[in-house]
Image (cartoon, rainbow, N blue to C red; front, side):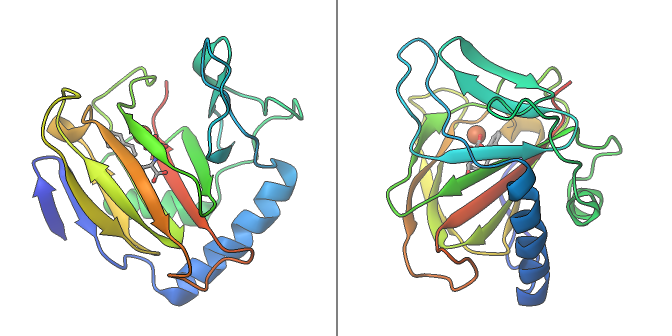
Length: 201
Ligand code: MD3
Ligand code: FE
């Protein structure tokens, strides 16, 4: 475990190749039930470059009217599929949180996708951490402080890495500068998938 700063823990290669392949195969089935959709920015309606889906009781969505957690997929209207047990096991092993996650956001990045610096503050309770798992292509992940103008650092996240953001790091600004195309052979078609496990309510 690498403590990047208070509350920010990085576990390199938490999932080995076989574990990544098993999870990839579970996600492939799950994404047939809850297809990736392209969210839009509140107010402007501009499309995200990242596509998203969710599993678990609640899912994070964004459209012209705002950001929120909701129980159903915005396009199919169906409830999000249950969180795979393998994902819950990762939370139990790494999150250091007795409560269980009620939301798992699935982000998909193609070679052009980015995520600008932001805070995650749509959850009701910031005392629970957020756990992030990366699969597929590596990315350059940027994190700063609690204020947008605070200095930032960039690290590379590789397939199988887990990051836990809790305590003093929970409201830190963060984003994905870019992915590193052809850095992994896990996904077909290629790209990067990031799972974030959260307590939304
Ligand atoms: C730090 N996702 O979905 S995961 C997001 O790789 C998001 O897809 C990025 O930022 C991705 O909101 C980064 C790392 C992450 C997630 C949540 C955080 C870092 C965080 C919440 C608080 C602080
Ligand atoms: Fe975020």
